[in-house]
Length: 474
Ligand code: PHE
Image 1: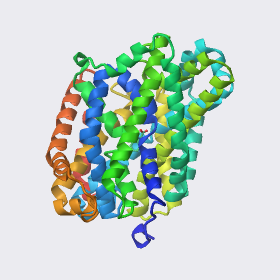
Image 2: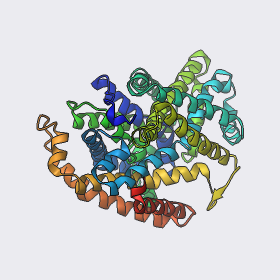
Image 3: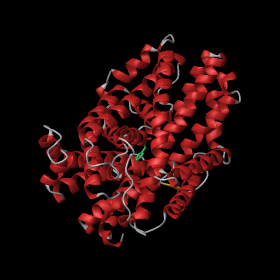
Image 4: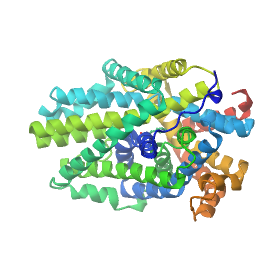
């Protein structure tokens, strides 16, 4: 039976929706990716550009996705398809992004769960070995795979239970816990001698460090962190009740997501500088700095806080990855007529295969493209190209394919909600954001050619163009 003949599940409560959408947004993107990406891209200046993109592009795109989702009552692909078949590819690119992000996200989610076990079995008792232990762990062929499989299994269980049962409950209970732990970690880090240099690195911008790579990285980070550009928030919006205030919801989700990212930066950088570690530590940053910090504290308190931190991180990761899985699953249910169980099994099997390649690539095993392994390819394609271009397509679709009156009607709940900035939002969506993204992506790709990255990003653009050409087939 196709989902269109069934009444659509609704979010149990308003808070439930905000927490579930925030649960999707707040995840590894904030706590694992944001700090090391900021570190790799020069610190303060990256943060300023990132915040700029969040406010002017992220907010607008999220509002657009919620509006389209609720208007059409369909998930990513159906929302486009039901309006204009030629636009189906935009949704399909979103589903593809979901698959590809889930081709590496569970690998890192698995690390987070593994660290609960590692902390519990004495990781903190030898602080000098924490860095090497991470390097050794992720390049091991077998261990990370088992944790990844366990992580993916948890996703499958949650998504099989359906929307209000699984996702909402997980989000509501566990997000506040994570927030509190991050505050404790931050305070602890800031108390260490030499920590102020970390704050300075994070917040005093040195604009000489900006180039087109940094700008594209900031744009990609904004999209990734806010779960935008792939129909995820569109799918969530399709389950949102007609009476909810979209503008307020968007503002709350954006603020929470950005708050957690900045807080994660504050939790990480002061401690790093105090420990004399380089800010360019890469993807291992959170797995090295945080345990070190708790080892420093010592005793049972250090141990308990470390345990709680990695439990919180795993849960934050889970509430995000279930939303990624949900995008692919909704597509299979709504468009291909699969049952929920079959859809979950199909989607997660493909993801498992991608994750095996991604995990092995970190130990130097498996195929490479332009000297880049699977983990980095999936990350580059999605974070640097698919999400940003996906967001651009969402804006073009809303601005040029939907009617202004319909959008206004949807966003203001038929005139009930005041949104004085509607005109500005509309101009951003229709003209400014598509042009801005095109420029940032073009410049980022061109300068990426210094390494193999430009070629992979160009490949991403090619895939999107190809999908557009055969759009009616999806
Ligand atoms: N926003 C999530 C995070 O920060 C990742 C994500 C991206 C989830 C895109 C859904 C869609 O971890």
